[in-house]
Length: 236
Figure (cartoon, rainbow, N blue to C red):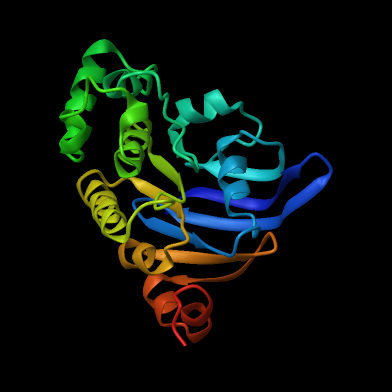
């Protein structure tokens, strides 16, 4: 069953159109990856879903249209967004950043959720009183994801979670995302340049070119597709 469905969605910036009649389904409980070159429209796709840019067409979330809702109401409906560049509040502590993500929760729920997500990212527990701006890149990404998880999303959108991270850190991050999905059943839509790592944990994927979906398949089939292997996975 589709948790998220896009129908003829178009989006862009001012007069410039970036996405053209996108049809996309994300199944409940699955990890889906979006592949594509720089400028293909991947970030725009996530921004359109989360309501932070203007868009046209239908966006269905759990069978309900959300394309006319504000970004705040989309968050409240159960969609969390970890933007490219992480977006942590550098002058606040790690703990303060995490608590900011719980603004829709009660104090009791926030305490419970904080403990739950810190169990997936134990390094953050060691740094709770530390300023977020002093964290390493990998730790800042963990913090950005934890803050989004504090919203209790049913769908988590992640934009280039590996950006600027060493390969070994990226591997650990994707293993953690897979573990979160395994334990919670959370649905994830991930835009990612490290296609080989993303496809290892994903169930399915799409390839975006010039604002249009040109290929969709299971993650296994995409990883074995000669054209995908050549362009996105670096194999000849």
